[in-house]
Image (cartoon, rainbow, N blue to C red):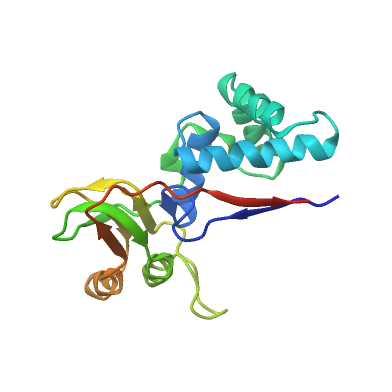
Length: 203
Protein backbone atom coordinates (compact mmCIF):
# COMPACT_ATOMS: atom_id res chain seq x y z
CA UNK A 1 0.00 0.00 0.00
CA UNK A 2 1.09 3.55 -0.70
CA UNK A 3 -0.01 6.78 0.98
CA UNK A 4 0.95 10.20 -0.40
CA UNK A 5 1.00 13.24 1.89
CA UNK A 6 0.89 16.48 -0.08
CA UNK A 7 2.56 19.36 1.75
CA UNK A 8 2.39 23.09 1.17
CA UNK A 9 5.56 24.30 -0.54
CA UNK A 10 4.69 28.01 -0.39
CA UNK A 11 7.18 28.27 2.48
CA UNK A 12 9.88 25.95 3.88
CA UNK A 13 8.70 23.06 6.05
CA UNK A 14 9.89 23.81 9.56
CA UNK A 15 12.40 26.61 10.07
CA UNK A 16 15.64 25.08 8.78
CA UNK A 17 16.97 25.03 5.21
CA UNK A 18 20.29 23.27 4.71
CA UNK A 19 21.78 19.92 5.59
CA UNK A 20 23.23 20.12 9.12
CA UNK A 21 20.64 22.69 10.21
CA UNK A 22 17.83 20.37 9.09
CA UNK A 23 19.44 17.47 10.96
CA UNK A 24 19.44 19.54 14.16
CA UNK A 25 15.79 20.49 13.60
CA UNK A 26 14.82 16.85 13.05
CA UNK A 27 16.57 15.78 16.26
CA UNK A 28 15.00 18.63 18.21
CA UNK A 29 11.60 17.60 16.87
CA UNK A 30 12.08 14.09 18.24
CA UNK A 31 12.99 15.72 21.57
CA UNK A 32 9.67 17.57 21.52
CA UNK A 33 11.19 20.96 20.66
CA UNK A 34 10.44 21.16 16.95
CA UNK A 35 8.55 23.88 15.06
CA UNK A 36 4.78 23.35 15.20
CA UNK A 37 4.32 22.83 11.46
CA UNK A 38 7.19 20.34 11.13
CA UNK A 39 6.17 18.52 14.32
CA UNK A 40 2.64 18.07 12.97
CA UNK A 41 4.01 16.68 9.71
CA UNK A 42 6.15 14.18 11.66
CA UNK A 43 3.09 13.15 13.69
CA UNK A 44 1.01 12.58 10.56
CA UNK A 45 3.79 10.68 8.76
CA UNK A 46 4.27 8.45 11.79
CA UNK A 47 0.53 7.93 12.14
CA UNK A 48 0.18 6.93 8.49
CA UNK A 49 3.05 4.44 8.87
CA UNK A 50 1.26 2.87 11.84
CA UNK A 51 -1.98 2.67 9.86
CA UNK A 52 -0.21 0.97 6.94
CA UNK A 53 1.44 -1.45 9.37
CA UNK A 54 -1.98 -2.29 10.78
CA UNK A 55 -1.21 -1.24 14.35
CA UNK A 56 -3.96 1.39 14.49
CA UNK A 57 -7.04 2.34 12.49
CA UNK A 58 -7.40 6.14 12.68
CA UNK A 59 -5.13 9.10 12.02
CA UNK A 60 -6.05 10.63 15.37
CA UNK A 61 -5.03 7.49 17.25
CA UNK A 62 -1.76 7.38 15.33
CA UNK A 63 -0.94 11.01 16.08
CA UNK A 64 -1.47 10.37 19.80
CA UNK A 65 0.83 7.34 19.59
CA UNK A 66 3.56 9.42 17.92
CA UNK A 67 3.16 12.20 20.49
CA UNK A 68 3.61 9.63 23.25
CA UNK A 69 6.86 8.15 21.88
CA UNK A 70 8.27 11.64 21.42
CA UNK A 71 7.29 12.56 24.98
CA UNK A 72 8.72 9.40 26.60
CA UNK A 73 11.96 9.50 24.60
CA UNK A 74 11.40 6.32 22.58
CA UNK A 75 11.47 8.20 19.26
CA UNK A 76 14.86 9.74 20.03
CA UNK A 77 16.19 6.39 21.23
CA UNK A 78 15.16 4.76 17.94
CA UNK A 79 16.91 7.52 15.99
CA UNK A 80 20.11 6.89 17.96
CA UNK A 81 19.85 3.16 17.20
CA UNK A 82 19.29 3.94 13.52
CA UNK A 83 22.32 6.25 13.39
CA UNK A 84 24.54 3.69 15.14
CA UNK A 85 23.30 0.90 12.87
CA UNK A 86 24.14 3.05 9.84
CA UNK A 87 27.72 3.54 11.04
CA UNK A 88 27.20 7.05 12.43
CA UNK A 89 27.82 8.54 15.86
CA UNK A 90 24.59 8.61 17.93
CA UNK A 91 26.19 11.17 20.26
CA UNK A 92 25.33 13.75 17.62
CA UNK A 93 21.80 13.75 19.07
CA UNK A 94 23.15 15.34 22.25
CA UNK A 95 26.20 17.20 20.94
CA UNK A 96 25.58 19.30 17.85
CA UNK A 97 29.24 20.36 17.76
CA UNK A 98 29.80 16.96 16.12
CA UNK A 99 27.98 18.38 13.10
CA UNK A 100 29.64 20.73 10.67
CA UNK A 101 27.72 24.01 11.09
CA UNK A 102 29.00 27.32 9.72
CA UNK A 103 30.05 29.74 12.46
CA UNK A 104 29.55 32.89 10.39
CA UNK A 105 25.97 34.16 10.43
CA UNK A 106 24.13 37.05 8.83
CA UNK A 107 20.74 38.29 10.00
CA UNK A 108 18.32 39.45 7.31
CA UNK A 109 15.65 42.09 7.87
CA UNK A 110 13.63 44.61 5.86
CA UNK A 111 12.32 48.12 6.45
CA UNK A 112 8.67 47.06 6.62
CA UNK A 113 6.13 46.02 9.22
CA UNK A 114 2.98 43.93 9.09
CA UNK A 115 1.79 40.37 8.92
CA UNK A 116 3.68 38.06 6.58
CA UNK A 117 1.25 37.25 3.77
CA UNK A 118 3.52 35.29 1.44
CA UNK A 119 7.05 33.88 1.29
CA UNK A 120 8.67 33.23 -2.08
CA UNK A 121 10.03 29.74 -1.42
CA UNK A 122 11.88 29.80 -4.74
CA UNK A 123 13.91 32.82 -3.61
CA UNK A 124 14.67 31.12 -0.28
CA UNK A 125 15.76 28.00 -2.16
CA UNK A 126 17.95 29.98 -4.54
CA UNK A 127 19.58 31.80 -1.63
CA UNK A 128 20.28 28.45 0.04
CA UNK A 129 21.81 27.16 -3.20
CA UNK A 130 24.04 30.24 -3.43
CA UNK A 131 25.19 29.58 0.13
CA UNK A 132 26.23 26.12 -1.03
CA UNK A 133 23.38 24.12 0.53
CA UNK A 134 22.13 22.93 -2.86
CA UNK A 135 23.35 22.21 -6.37
CA UNK A 136 22.98 24.40 -9.45
CA UNK A 137 24.49 21.56 -11.52
CA UNK A 138 25.00 17.86 -10.79
CA UNK A 139 28.74 18.45 -10.38
CA UNK A 140 28.40 21.09 -7.62
CA UNK A 141 29.68 20.08 -4.18
CA UNK A 142 27.22 20.60 -1.32
CA UNK A 143 28.43 22.40 1.80
CA UNK A 144 26.63 20.64 4.66
CA UNK A 145 27.48 23.43 7.12
CA UNK A 146 25.54 26.28 5.52
CA UNK A 147 21.87 27.15 5.31
CA UNK A 148 19.03 29.32 6.56
CA UNK A 149 16.97 29.48 9.73
CA UNK A 150 13.57 31.08 9.22
CA UNK A 151 12.72 33.35 12.15
CA UNK A 152 9.30 34.34 10.76
CA UNK A 153 6.74 32.42 8.70
CA UNK A 154 3.43 33.18 6.95
CA UNK A 155 0.91 34.57 9.45
CA UNK A 156 3.54 35.89 11.85
CA UNK A 157 3.57 39.53 12.88
CA UNK A 158 6.77 41.35 11.88
CA UNK A 159 8.00 44.68 13.17
CA UNK A 160 10.67 46.73 11.44
CA UNK A 161 14.02 45.84 12.97
CA UNK A 162 13.12 42.24 13.78
CA UNK A 163 14.93 39.38 12.06
CA UNK A 164 13.20 37.52 9.22
CA UNK A 165 15.85 34.85 8.77
CA UNK A 166 19.44 33.99 9.69
CA UNK A 167 21.97 32.91 7.09
CA UNK A 168 24.74 30.46 7.98
CA UNK A 169 27.47 31.05 5.42
CA UNK A 170 31.03 30.26 4.44
CA UNK A 171 31.45 32.12 1.16
CA UNK A 172 31.78 35.75 0.07
CA UNK A 173 28.44 36.05 -1.73
CA UNK A 174 26.69 38.03 1.01
CA UNK A 175 25.62 40.90 -1.27
CA UNK A 176 24.37 38.59 -4.04
CA UNK A 177 22.39 36.50 -1.56
CA UNK A 178 20.79 39.56 0.04
CA UNK A 179 19.85 40.78 -3.45
CA UNK A 180 18.28 37.39 -4.21
CA UNK A 181 16.18 37.61 -1.03
CA UNK A 182 14.78 41.00 -2.09
CA UNK A 183 10.99 40.69 -2.28
CA UNK A 184 10.93 37.19 -0.79
CA UNK A 185 8.56 38.38 1.97
CA UNK A 186 5.21 40.02 1.19
CA UNK A 187 3.45 41.89 4.00
CA UNK A 188 -0.14 42.78 4.80
CA UNK A 189 -1.51 45.22 7.34
CA UNK A 190 -4.43 42.86 7.91
CA UNK A 191 -4.03 39.76 10.07
CA UNK A 192 -3.03 36.72 8.00
CA UNK A 193 -3.95 33.13 8.82
CA UNK A 194 -1.26 30.48 9.06
CA UNK A 195 -1.14 28.33 5.94
CA UNK A 196 -1.86 24.59 6.33
CA UNK A 197 1.20 22.34 6.32
CA UNK A 198 -0.63 19.37 4.82
CA UNK A 199 -2.87 19.96 1.80
CA UNK A 200 -4.14 16.43 1.29
CA UNK A 201 -3.56 12.77 2.11
CA UNK A 202 -4.01 10.39 -0.82
CA UNK A 203 -4.25 6.64 -0.40
